[in-house]
Image (cartoon, rainbow, N blue to C red):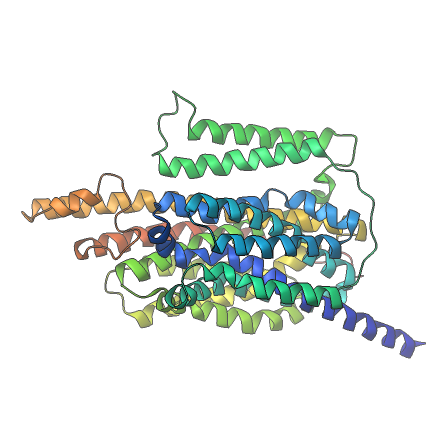
Length: 507
């Protein structure tokens, strides 16, 4: 009898792992597109004749369209089957990638990126739903390790792939490459991913509207504040009013979820579980940190140190290598010990390494020194993804898998969206301040500051090109200060992870 049970488990594991490997192809692709644009930003600015705010929206539009629908796309997977919803999202993502590459102007590119984000939002929660529903808890750690490795590598490899394509084939190919990969993923899903049991759900359309409007107003307000110097609080409708309206709608959304008699979009009862609640906070911090860190680093390496997009991205390669090697190994161990023993040091290492990178940024920092922090970022990343993911899904029942996965992926993407908007704000503020100091120093020294004056006044000097030499130190200090944001947020996440508890279901 035991032999038959073992044979059955082995057969189930074979199906589950075959499905997971097929799904992670698409999962890898959508996460790469969250960061791949960072390396190509200067090239896109020059090619499409846009400014820094326009090109930031190329990334923020994708992240926003990715994040907003996640609460409902997880439920759609429960209702119509995660395989069906994943495939629909994969087709949308692949076709919109072709549209992105063919875009003649930045407005078209932003629109295409919105559609691409919608496709990604349909795919992302289904991967985690499959893991929760197909792997029993005792063997789920290894699956989460693979999922975490893919997530970590994708967000770190994105800039490297972006650099290679920009230097060789052109920025359009950061999107064109998704077409053959998408076709491969569709073929593998059709062959390897089984249909799972469907659960009937009603849809809270008022909740959908409130959550979407709240998220849009918050991110749009922050992003537009960057481009318009925030403006006065009292006066015409501006960024502050949008942000406050977003916070009010977010409060209304939470109130509605607690009061509605129908099935809520976010079952607030899930948050009674401490592990689920803390894991969502921690992964939001991780989403913010990992999205916010890459642009200042890449901008420093390209604009101050004069590296090509490929070389600048390769300077961050140790993160991807270390995370890719260690995450699956850690995943196999994380279900055997308390997850916080990996998550706490992982977050601390990740945040401390980003902070250290920011503190050592100078115009002449040796390149070998700049290669050290990414090693520890990769180590921290490898410890974070599987431990936090396993903690979030530990107590999810079969019927709650879609809702829980949708919430978890939403919080991660909310963090990423806010990271993209806040790092733009931080960079603009610090570059303006440090550049003004440098220009004043040149003027006091009696040098010709006429060229510098054109770069000051609150603009983003040199954002799309190599920075003038007299501003190298100012730019380096400013970008290093901006990196303190993602660094300190990740360190704060280590305190959140201290609350992870041992126990829960063992199915």
